[in-house]
Image (cartoon, rainbow, N blue to C red; front, side):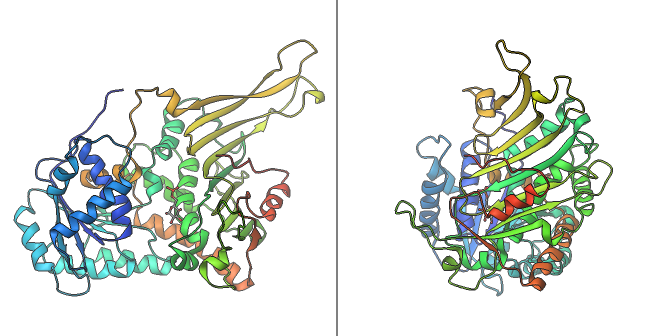
Length: 491
Ligand code: BG6
């Protein structure tokens, strides 16, 4: 497969929070990988900005360590790190004060009309307003400016509205890029390719043929290093309101007329607005228990956050419905959790049984299943029913038609860019298709808030589950009550 590097226009990219964890783990390595791929135009600059006073040499040393730890996976010629660092600058800047702002504007203003200025707000949301305001005051918020903001975008509907309003004071919606890194994943975009690039699936993609859909994002990791944030958020705010919601939208939305930002986002928004409120008995929340295994010992959820009474969930399973013509009557089951049996993100589309079996009762029940594996082992499996080979009558058996993308694309298949690489390049190019629009984020909070309020008012306490298990047993009951079962969580 021929590598396609589409050139981008010259740019300056300022990373506020340029010494932080996200910059070191994701943003700088992603930029470096694009640099190695030859996608940096002549003169493109990266400017780290943070409160810490440090020399350029010290910043370069920090970036070099970050690259050696987190930029694996792309072959780079010797000396490339030094060439990359030639593009990297540092300005000690205080979001809340005056420090650094004139230096930043001296650096950026002379070329402002010839190149894109991207400001990456890799800082807590409480600083978004101050940064937007200062960019404006210093003449850095202009028509060539784009800003990138990270999740969590708010804590609830009210705070998300406040953030949107603060950003809207100085930037048009077309300049704001709200990241949900799931949308940058190769396989998540494949959901759209599978649905809208094939004739095969779309005619069956509705409640007449689909019995139910399961979306699982299981993680084997815990919350180490993020305890404080996580205990305020929980799985609902950390994963369901954004990542799972995006998967649900892509699976359930109507075909957009074009693959363009507003056409796609309009359709996603319609899905969120059509979601029914979730009934209390359709939700199961869980918290992982301690693990004593000497190979991987760790405390319980409550032990990890240092609060023996914490009622924050590290696991959630729920059943929801989309009230529209396509999906009326088809339940969507969503689940996600930490410290589960394996890291596995899969969407299972479970089709209905054939309306009548010509083979009689003894042939058993057989329904098709389309499994879309998002990570790891990305690919698609379609389970089909065939005759069991050999004599002895008409016995039916289900077999998988399996396509693992890595195998299907062959040994010459390109190493696809990671989510952050793709998303950052999209910002520079000005393509918002894979970013969340303000109204979309608000609608997602609008659906999430009453669910959270409901369990708070009921004093709901999460159910314990063993680390390394598929989750609390109540989640199985949620399915069994409906005569269904979760598919296994397999690596
Ligand atoms: C983040 C969540 O947005 O996504 C984390 O805050 C989670 O809690 C992570 O672990 C999962 O991302 P990925 O790419 O590893 O599936």
